[in-house]
Amino acid sequence: MTATKGVEFEGRFFWAYDVAAGVFLKHLIDEAEASKHIDEPWLSKAVSSWRVQAAITEAGLTLEEEWSSAQRAILIELAEAACKKLEKRKSIPSEEIASWPMTDNLRIFPRSATEVLTAPIIELGRAIIALLSGNLPQSPKGEAWFYGTPTGRSTIRMNPPWNG
Image (tube, rainbow, N blue to C red; front, side, top):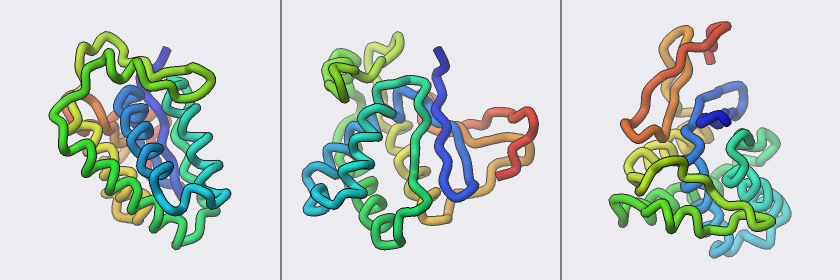
């Protein structure tokens, strides 16, 4: 079982720690479901997909390239709200994370953590915002960014090298 999820949008790519991605997606889903846009088909479809992606460790994070600039702006707004909500807490106990039903009674697997710090999750959320905005910094040559780890952003060597 891998601990990484690929995140890709418009040819740019980075890795995310699966636990952080799951927790971020849960908060993004909460913001989407509370928004006035939840009845829009593209967002309802995205939320359904994010529920699966949050709970299934091996599922990558899908950011749809066909979203319009207005839809991306809504998603960025929701992601910013999710980050702000996460900023109110220093950590989340693993028991709480494991209690969140995502889909078909599947839940986020917090691995061996007793708690998950929110700072790396917020950093991941901001990386997703930067990716959607076209502002994600280039990773070092031959490496890909790795966000959401308990120690913060790092890189993973890519073979063959990723130059995205």
